[in-house]
Amino acid sequence: MVQRSADSDELAERVAAHLISRLARIQQHGRVPSIALTGGSIAVKIHETVAESPDRHLVDWGHVDFWFGDERFVPAADPERNARQVRTAMLDHLPVDSARVHEMPAADGRHAGDLDAAAAEYAQQVRTLGSGEFHVVMLGIGEDGHVASLFPGFPQLDVDDTIAVAVRNSPKPPPERLSLTFSALERTRELWFVASGAGKAEAVRRAMDPATDVHEVPASRPRGRQRTFWFLDEEAASQL
Ligand code: 6PG
Image 1 (tube, rainbow, N blue to C red):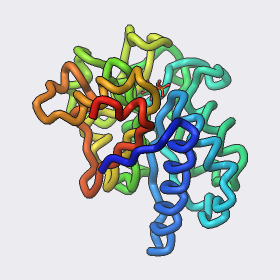
Image 2: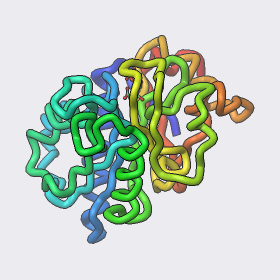
Image 3: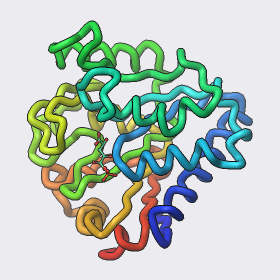
C-alpha cells in the first residue's frame, strides 16, 4: 500500500500519526506493541515528529517494546549510533520504560571488537525477550536499495537461519554494523518502508518490482505478514 506525501515534512507527519494510531490500537486490544526502528535521516525526522505530536498521549509509552533493525557498531555515545539518534529524537522525550528499549550492543560494550558475539547476543535477546513477532518493522531504503544493514551483493542477504548478523565493510559508513536478517525482519505483522527524495526513486521502483533480484535490491524482499506500507514523498515515488 503506497502512501504518498508532498514532501518529507508531510511524510514524517503521516508516519508519526500512523505509528501513534497503530500503537494505541494494539494497546486497546490489551497487547504490548513490539516495534523495530531504523536509522537514517527520514527516520530521525519521523521520530522527532512522534515526540512532538499532540496525539502522543494516546500511547502508553511505558508499555511499548522498542527494537532496532540495525545498528552501527560504534561506541554507545557515538552520534552515529542509531539508538542514540532514536533516544535524542524521540525516546528521551517520552515516558518509555528503559527496560523495554532493546538496543543492539555497542562497540565499547562487553563485546568490544567482537561483532559476531554482539550479533549473537542480540539474537538471543530477541529470542528470549521478544514476543516472537513484531507488530511493526520500519525500514528506510538506501539509494542502492539496502534496508537495515543488508546491502546489495553482501553475503548476509542469504543468511536465513539466524536473527542477527555482523556486517563488515559496509558501503554506507561506518563500516562495522549489526543487522537483523530478512527472516527476522519479516517476522512482523506490518512492514513500513519510509523513503524521501529523488535519490530513492529508482530503488523504490525496483524494490516494488517482483522481478527484481534481492541481491541487487535488498528492499525487494522484506514484506509484512499482514500489510506492507510504502510511505513515500512525491520525489521518492516519482518513478512509480
Ligand atoms: C542506517 C539505516 C539505513 C537507513 C537507510 C536510509 O543504519 O543507516 O538503518 O538502513 O535507513 O540508509 O537512510 P536515509 O533515510 O538517511 O537515506
